Length: 113
Length: 116
Image (cartoon, rainbow over all chains, first blue to last red; front, top):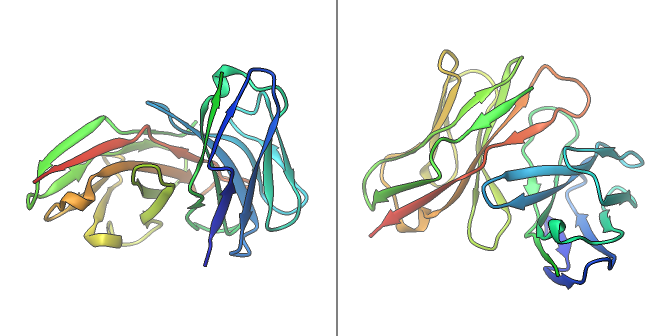
């Protein structure tokens, strides 16, 4: 099973450019998440989608937008990239209810110059 | 507000020795507690979780964790460390009593270095 698949794995952008990170899961999970990982700060939630058709802001949503395209896919868009958005981005999914654990993708390393 | 503290940025242990990675938490209701491991340039992988019941939880790769409600701790342990255990470990908490999204809060991570 592929689990959670993210693309691209690496990307370099110039300040002001836009891009979309793609995420797809094949586990039929209801909930999907986007996190960013920065040294010394752990993982911080950007946006999440509790179910198909819904999205909500997490801890650090500024500068990002998301789309829950269908049950499988959840994309993260940077409209005008800034150096502060240089980070490693992780997509995750889990079953919608109960104490289920998160399943993570391999990450997308983004550098904004 | 819920929080997780991992007081050690790095833990060094000799191969074959027991290891402990510490985690304390704060949550208003009953906690769901998780440990994840991250190998270099990889995503996080689930190790184990505490939901309810037995305070000693066993997980993948020989790891276990002990839930201590009075000390609000959930320390990760392994009786005999392997070099291949070297990785970044994250503790996470969720409030089981919260409705809706049930936010997961992660600690800042502890780097485990097992020395041959």
